[in-house]
Length: 109
Image 1: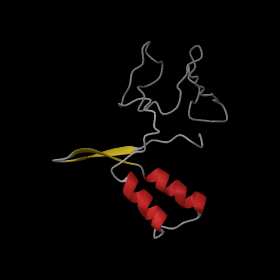
Image 2: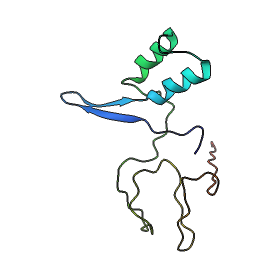
Image 3: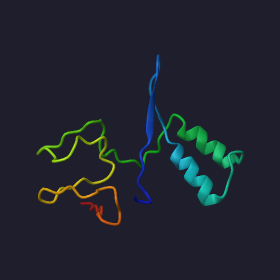
Image 4: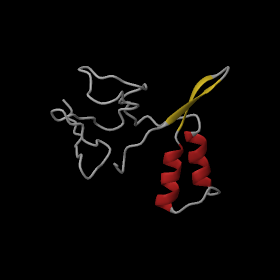
């Protein structure tokens, strides 16, 4: 799997609505900076990502049991976090980085 993509979560709080959380970025900071849960920087990040998501995100897709158009050969997809592909009648393992490689590029005008 990629070293830089991940999903963030939301939970529904009755009377409030959907709340975003991203514990992965807190854990990543802990591992990269070798900090523990009591470090003030980690506490600050935990407070920020509990109910917030930084502005540098790109939403690729939402939903569950997704059917593509044209319809994919396999089962409905539960997410589009990674590219999905079909080659002829084969569906390669699109979650295996050893057999399915891709590149994401962008340009500005």
